Image (cartoon, rainbow, N blue to C red; front, side):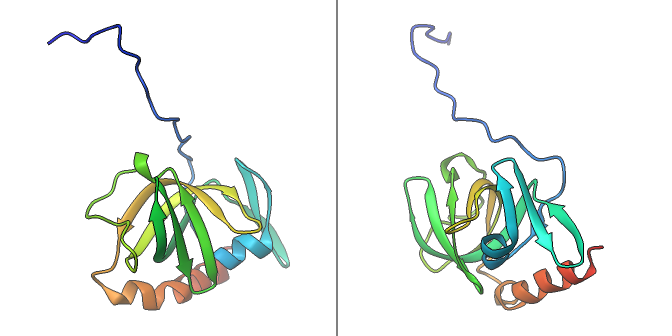
Amino acid sequence: MAADSSLPVRTPAAVRLPRAPPLKVLAEQLRQDAEGVPGAWRLLRVGREPLELAAVWMQGTVVAAGGGEARLRDPSGAFAVRGLERVPRGRPCLVLGKYVMVMGVVQACSPEPCLQAVKMTDLSDNPIHERMWELEVEDLHRNIP
């Protein structure tokens, strides 16, 4: 079947995928220790060089969802995620109370962190993910030079 060239072609705005692997962070770290602008965020660290935030990996519980956006809460606070209508997902993730992982590009850090989503995955089946998340992030940041 031939495509009808008279129909407008709508493609969603592309998210520029980062080249570096995502950095695991908590919402509080972005609120308190990040500086920059979209596409050029850095995480400031006492006594060490800042970390470039090309992409981040965050986990949290869905507290609100709708219209391709969601609000999640991790152990340190809330954060927003946009562009969810364009990301690959396995099982339905955008259900209140689900514990999910989001990989994305930081759009804002204040007053509340906001990510442009690249990927989202439901982690609710294994409660270890939620219990260990804060320790995982802490351990990572302690060991990054």
